[in-house]
Every structure is written in C-alpha cells, then in structure tokens.
Image (cartoon, helix red, strand yellow):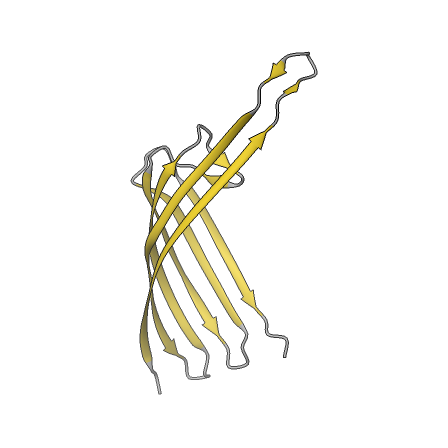
Length: 136
C-alpha cells in the first residue's frame, strides 16, 4: 500500500563569523596593518517534502527549499572562512533533492543547491550527499 505525507520544515538561523589578522611585515619589508573582517547573516525559509513509502518498505522524500539570506554585516571580500558573500545584502538560495530511508536505519540525502537568486553578481552551484549508517 502506498502512503503519502507532506512535511513542511520552517527554519530561521543567525550566523556570525569574524576573522582577525594581526599586523605583520611582508618579505619586501612593507608593513601590513591588522584587520578584522566580519559577516553577520540571517537565513530564513521553508523546506517542503513529499514522503511516500515504496513497495519494498523504503521511504522516499523528494524535497525543495527556498532560503532567504540577509547579510546584516558584510565584509568587502567575496568569501569569508568558506562562506560566500553576495554582492547584494538580500538574496535567496534554492535547493532540491531526495532522501531515502531504509527500515534498518540507513538513510541517504542528496541535494543540489543554487545560490544567488536576486543577485546578478553571485551564481554559486553546489551539492551535498549525506549518508547515515546506524551502528547498532
């Protein structure tokens, strides 16, 4: 029997990253002043999934997410500690993927991401694969 379920997962997150560089003198003897670079970001939006169970008992969950991102404190660099900084203070990221759960607890999540909706200067593509293996 095929059973169907929808899942709506709202989320809100605040991230703050700060990187400090001490002053130094380079190999040519030029003094480089110290600097502090910060990024403050508010992320918000839903993830919507549609869960169904296959005939073999495996649960599948295709999903989509749209996340708004507002950088309330922005550095003058394109990336800070691996986090991309948009040219606009407000932009969005879209994700689509699928999760699969086996009866024994094994699960896999594969998601593709596009970041830069609403920002002509940012076009970032990515993907994630999560594998959950229970150790009973």
